[in-house]
Image (cartoon, rainbow, N blue to C red; front, side, top):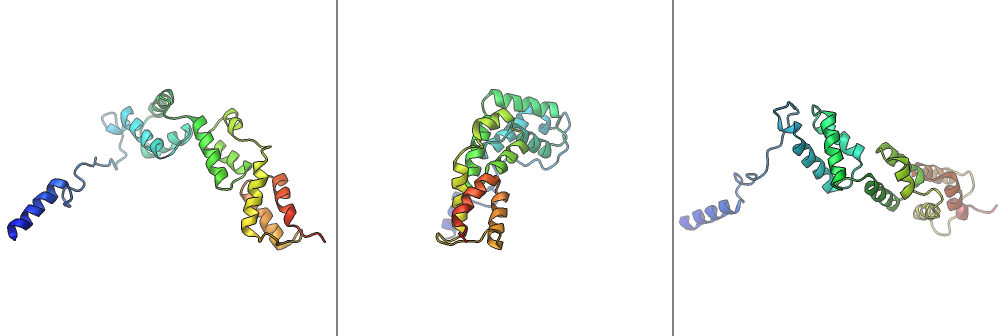
Length: 195
């Protein structure tokens, strides 16, 4: 019985399930931010690998990656980080256009309007000409999206009075979601009572 138990322990150790071997193959985390020329965090390969880890999770704009790398490696030179970002763009691993396309589609699916998405893209350093390729102010989908959001908050046959507390609350909600006055008016109009 003792021999059988020892064989099971040996087998478990070989499979890497024992506690001592559990993290044996994980690379140690560099928790210190002491980046000198001899330190591995000043190396372009470490910066590139970290940036690629971020990109593996989701698309990032160049500005987002730059901010994240500067935050993680504060003593790394901005010239080295810029060089890494340029190389990532050359290798087609990072693209502001791809990011803008994904971001617009994602935020629209979450019920956000034109103004909100536009602000998000500008905060992330996306150029105006790239924004104009993927985000359209005169898209009819904005009104449909606003109507969909209202229908989740009101019953189908519910009517509200203009200027009422419910009306003001809906207006504020749609404005906070980034819808323009025209879209809000068109979306709320079917729900207003005709007095």
